[in-house]
Length: 124
Image (cartoon, rainbow, N blue to C red; front, top):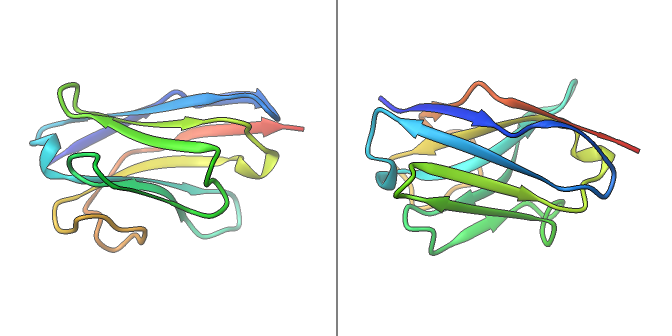
């Protein structure tokens, strides 16, 4: 069983940057594809970015392409989300998730393990 703990959220202004971290424990981190999702009030949870077990491939939602970067450090059991040029519409709770069954995925179903989320608020 993998436990995921996100950190790094906060209140920032439009145009600022944040880096989210997700620390994994209790499993073989390099065995899991990882992803970041986000959910804002009244909306469904949506995928932001995903990364393969080795980090060789990544996928981004069109809304964050060119602004966000997902990466991982398997030696530190951590996945990151670097968020640049933040916009008010990026305001949401951000969750990391782990999947042992897929190479990479941008939907919720394959992800068995989820963190508790970290809040990101971007003011205009």
